Image (cartoon, rainbow, N blue to C red):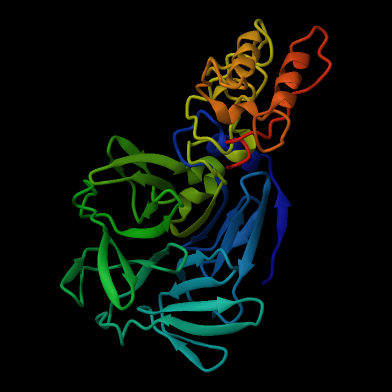
Length: 374
C-alpha cells in the first residue's frame, strides 16, 4: 500500500469529540472512508479508487489497493481485524492473479501476500445482474452488504437500497430494515460498518434527516437498534474538512475504541476498566475524608462494606469476618484481597490498617477481584 501521512489539528479535535466520556456515540480509534470524486481532504488528495485513513488523533493516510484501475470507484470497503481488505468497485475490473470482479462481487485482498480472491461471488449466489454492492460491513463473518437497487435474494429476502443484509453459510438474512427505522425510501445506504456492541455505522448518498438528526452525504450516523432505534452523528465530514461538501462519502470502515467492560467508557479513561460502571462514581479513596482517587467505587479494593471508600469500618469488618467462627459477613468479600495474595487474610487486614494511618505506611494494591478480571 502507498501511504502519505500528515498531522492535522482538526483530526485531534474530532477524535476527542468522538472519544470523550460525555459523548453518547461509540468512541472510535480510526475511521477509513472513500469519496466518490477526487477531493483534497485534510491536506491530501484522495481519488475514488483510494481510501482515506483517519486516526482521529491528528494523522491521515491515503491508501491504494494495488491493481484497482484509476477509472474505478471503490464504492464499498472494509478493513478486517486481521489486516485483510474487502472491497467492491462500480465497474467490472481485471485484477492481478487472473481475478475478474463484477460490481456485485466482494473481493478480498491480503496485503501481506498481495493475494486477491473473490470472497462473495454475486452471480453464483443469486444477486441479479446489474446490481451493485455499494456497502460492506462487519469483520467478514458474517458479511454485511447493501445494494444500490431493490434486490430479491435467495431465501425470500428482499432488500431495498436503504437496507442492509447479513450473509453467512450461504444464507441471506435481513440486518437493517430502512423503512422500519424510518429511513426515507429516497435514500441509498452507501456506507456501512458494525461496531463490537452491535450498533451500525451508516452513511447515505444524499442529505436528509432521520430520528431528528440532520445529516449530509459525507456524514456517518450511528444506529442503535432494534427498529426504529435511535440515530446519532458519529462522523461529521464537513466538520473534519469543508471540502467533504463537494463529495459523497461512499465507503466506511471503523475501528472502535477498546471498552472491555462495555459500559460506554474507553478502557484508557475508564476508572473501572474491567467492571461495568456507566456512572463512573468515585466518592473517595482511602480514608474517611479522602477525595476521589480516580478509582471507581465499583472496583475500590478494600471497600468490603460497599460504601465506595476504604475506612476503619472496612478494617473492623475484615477482622470480624476472619474470626473463627466469623462474627460478621463482608458484603463485598472479593475486595478484601488488597495485597494480591488471591484471598482474604490477616495480611490484607494489616495492609488496610496501615493504609489508614496518617501518614500511611502501606499502600492498597488495585489487584483484588474483580479489578483483576476474576
